[in-house]
Length: 243
Image 1 (cartoon, rainbow, N blue to C red):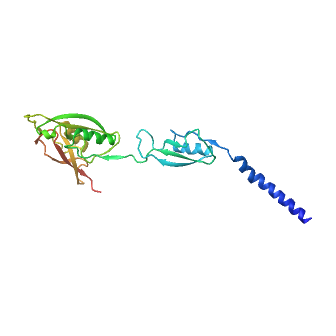
Image 2: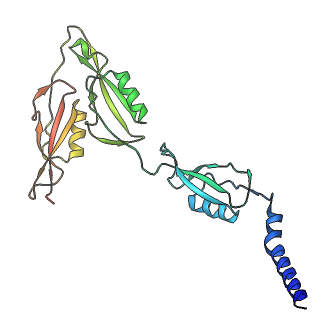
Image 3: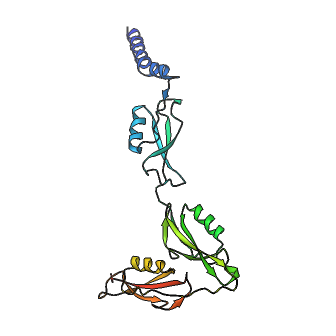
């Protein structure tokens, strides 16, 4: 009798295992789900969409920054939308590069225009305007003799600047112009004044003062009214407040 009872228990246990374990595995073998399209939507929405489809995900970031795409937008996925995969499959979604790349502007003086143009294109910086300036030195022909933004200015993709390129004229004399007086002006206004007069802004130096107006020019080199060739770089010193 005990043996019969033991056999019955074993059969019941086997039936339970077959019903709850073996059969689900058997019926799920070969089943698949279709990968939804999550490109062009917010990453959080993409996660939820994949989760609802019974899929997992991994997140990666593009090596190239796309300035027209929000940093949280999915720009591609693998496997592609419409692919048939097993439930639980991990879908790789790619987001835009998180850090907006910056470019520290070099001093272009003396560089051929073609080289400068190529360098700026590599960093997606636009040349807004190119002006010509008569030069008395033949070696400056076709080379940059001035730029609208000073060296070391930090720019981001899509920014722009203007350039001044030398045009050699044999026997020609370059007219000298007086450097404008920008003392007391705010840095932004001083730069506009200098560039508008045909010169370029160069290095900016700082001096601490708690009595003078912050961000105003307290010194310039060359000094005001000095006669200089167009394109001459004017260095400025401005006030900053002590910490």
